[in-house]
Amino acid sequence: MSGHRGKVIIAMSGGVDSSVAAGLLCERGYEVSGLFMRIGLGAMQEQGANRSGDGPACLDGPAGGEVPALRARCRGCCNAAGAADARAVAAMLGIPFFAMNFKEQFDRIIDYFADEYARGRTPNPCILCNQRLKFGRLAEYARAAGADFVATGHYARIDGRAGSYRLRRAVDMNKDQSYALFGVEREMLPGMLFPIGKLTKEEVRDHARRFGLEIHDKRESQDICFAPDRDYARVVRARRPEAFTEGPVVDSSGKEVGRHGGIANFTIGQRRGLRIAMGVPIYVTALDADTNTVTVGSKQELASDRVRASRVHWLVDRPSGPVSAQVKIRYAHQAAPAVVQPIGADRVEVRFDAPQTAVTPGQAVVFYDDDVVLGGGWID
Image (cartoon, rainbow, N blue to C red; front, side, top):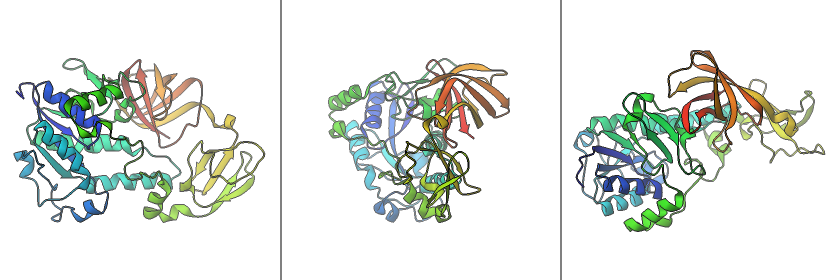
């Protein structure tokens, strides 16, 4: 490994995507160090939490390497069982490996998750994790270590030249994760690497086999990491029990048609679990945390041709007027043609060419020009 292309810190989860990304970077001549982000999930991780409370806990893997500038900032050591696969991959690739304790920062993301559900909104914690941790705190530590780049196993692409770098969708649109990356800082783009952004999932697994990685067929999770059973209500109840106060379920005319056990049990567009018989399919169409009211209605009542969003973040020069774009209102949404109209320093109104179903407060709305991410914001 020559290292002539620069020094890279890559976030390694132990999954096939980040493991192959690390292997490809090594092949391309980068000086690679792997990092496992400990976020405090699981009993073993809790027991191994950083005891001093004044710095990230680090762990050298069997590859035997360490990053001195980071190591100097560590206090104590920890044992994160989830790092085992990542450490094994690092050892096979012959790269230094360490782990850092981001539990405190990640705990704030879980608080945000619970707060949003308690407010009748549906959060997306993965976007905040990318923004605040992977390309926030992790990037800060990478700079302290003298690294030139931060890399991950995201399916996305970066291209361009000095002053005009762009975030683009992955080649494999079925795996594209650019939606969850709109919140990264624009000035970070030149220092970000996504080695698998041009590959399909099967091609990634083929590379894993070529590298001789035992995790080549490891199952991937589509769930939020702190709620692997998809029981989001359990997470919210543990932190915001007041969000589970009984209240009315009403139809679009305001007539009470049932009772609910807590507004945090619901999201816009939900059909299952309503336990209300009205003779036709009904869906959650609105949530009002102030009155603790759940409104239900027909699928037609879920449709909306406009979205207002705040905390808008641009990855291109902020437009002074309306912009035609393809717009996604959630991760799995098929981007739809729309006009994005700035209406303030960090707010926009999106007008779709055709009504979209289940516009959900708390989710991100992301704007694209073909495969280039223009920016995005949070649906109000």
